[in-house]
Image (cartoon, rainbow over all chains, first blue to last red; front, side):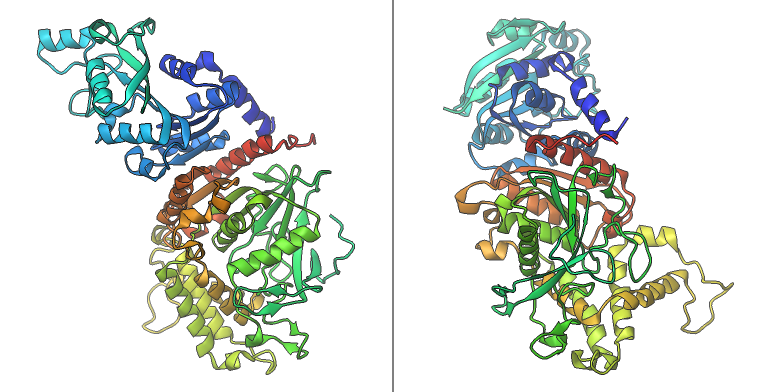
Length: 216
Length: 392
């Protein structure tokens, strides 16, 4: 098999069915043919689906070298970089969507990062794990120990998630920054959508939330 | 590609006279023309002339990308990157590489004959810049009937030319791959070049630049220049791994100034072999061209503006690569270019390849680098609508 055939088969192998559930929810929020920046794009799974199936003009930033290598080697436009230092370089309104998936809670300055997302993109798509999820509340209440769940599987001393929040916290930050949640999708443990409302029940029942945020 | 107007030369490749109708205006204000450009091509130009890749060589490189070198007999300098089935696949792309002007492997440079005097140019050759080298390449590419290059690729000084191409002729470049390079030559790099030049000029055999007329050669000076420069192409870990403090064919130090250490012997060998293939004045001119390189300077000191032709984001797709152990063109230099490209929301990929081989890694067997460039070019070829690799 020639190296090109190999690339082709790898590219063909991945479709929307194969990617992580929350990434698929994000993909559903993106209009075809738009310009997308995926911040923390990992191995490029989402970018690849967006490029192949929605014809977007996609770019990515990824911190890990392995991720960057995989992305560029499969033909995606990705740079090695750190969202907290590199986002400031991008001009306002450069993209239709800026995506930050499951990473906001690991940022040193989540508020500043969210501000950059909303500045660079006409819309930001942000997914966050919900620390108000009932199982987490229950663990803390009953065991008096920092919760460790399937979704947030780290011990307190090793977790990269230094700024965890609840759905209610996130929504309040968005409002506080003068931004607006245009759409939200709340997902439960089984990976099923429990609703699009982000009120108190969602904050209890949702394991994560995906938010379409805009800045007007 | 057979070029009927090209002149046959004693070694592989072609040579063409350019700037005959109108001399080329150089950045210094001087004019050069007519002048010769020696070049080599590999692969086949497709019908709509959309599959051409220009390879830009580094300071002491030449256009023998895949040919056995006519002087040293060594194999082509970028056989790792270019060739059938390689990332720059000659079964798919039409590859062009030309010797830079100011060089000494067939293109017009200080050792060639000045038509005005009938004698070698020597120091009468005008000072050239990276911009001038690229200007000459553009004339060559036009001469070959190519409006837009699919890709311009090169490392080190070759990478400077790639950046210059993308900035000077954004509509003529589809994809740009600058490797282990910078948008400007740093003070430290200028300093190293100055050491090399002083070594050459301090050699009495240099004869004020007129050594060819006197039938002499500043071999010692040029060898020292090469030795000093060669250290900057490696890294401390690589030197240590290769040589350590090992002694050269002896059991103990000799308490003298022979090459006791293997690393000394290696450097002396590098120096001695270099002078057989390279012209000292060319070394002065080309190092000077690198020193003068500063892309931002022509754009109000703001690098991002260089990538915003007529106020619009550059259409060129970029893939930059740097090497973790390269201290001559460190990753921070590539990152500065990436930041400028981000500032105009250009299409850019960037990887730092982990290696201990230093700056020279771009010439060596670095699978990560080759995998990344292959992937980038495949993706670009798809966007450009180039056919897949021909069936063998």
